[in-house]
Image (cartoon, rainbow, N blue to C red; front, top):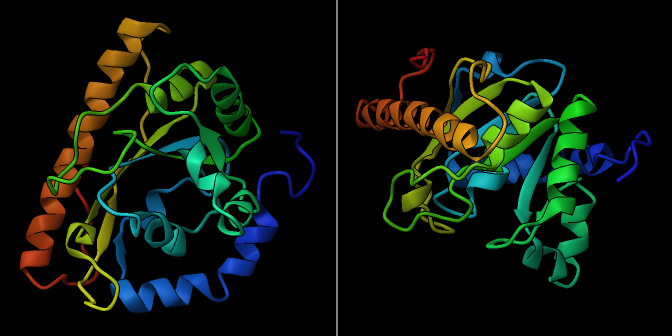
Length: 221
């Protein structure tokens, strides 16, 4: 992917923020905590847990930055919808196999100062809480020396179209993966740290939802 002005999908985001974002927030009653922790500029990796397809528009609708999501390549083959996603600068990846082109594009995006959004488990978790973090987010952050921004989504595990279940996400403090060496062992160890932070945020959000989601709270970490 080249680095032309709209190569990363900003035009698509500009369009969707006028209608996808309001619709998403209406359907999910979306709320976010700690949005000011997302770096205003520069490359970073948002490491997000994944419970439901609604996670994608929910995080994007409230994010102060346009995101380059990493998504399974099968989505790009859906007639009409696939092109719409590509218009938003998604990075398609082949799950379950080595995809060097996708890794290259993730690294290019981070190097170009983009916010790369990666669902850490690699697939939706059907048991209702974050799963094991795969090495993708750590690999990009370590290789490009950019911060990880841990993000936990809660409530989407209960969401279905029309039930208006409240959905929220919490953003942790960005942190560098200093001290983790490039390579399989370093990526695995760093992924455990990412997973730990996302779980802390997730459990905090569960308590916030139990309290009725008061506004103005500051997430841990």
